[in-house]
Length: 93
Ligand SMILES: [Zn+2]
Image (tube, rainbow, N blue to C red; front, side):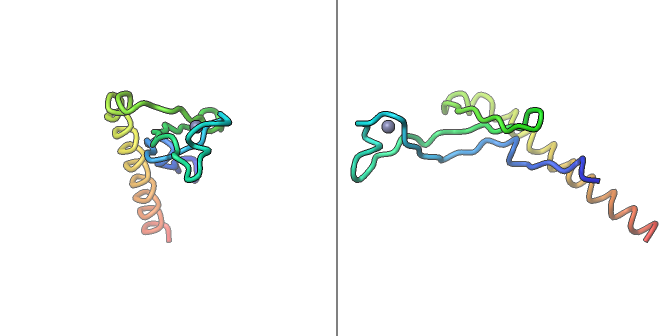
């Protein structure tokens, strides 16, 4: 029953993360810190493992339609699962 459950965020683009880097004397270590970003992250699940890739704003613009379609597909699958469950419970109790 759970095989059709998708985490929609896994296929979506996450925006707005600010980060510190690994350099010792960087502005992100200053007081007050000036963090890097915001970075866009594309998070997916591949063979059960979370894979995250940082994207530039230009890459995000370019591939946004793919992310939007993937998210819509997940929403439709979730609706289909809910509808089939309702139909089953209506008929079978
Ligand atoms: Zn830094």
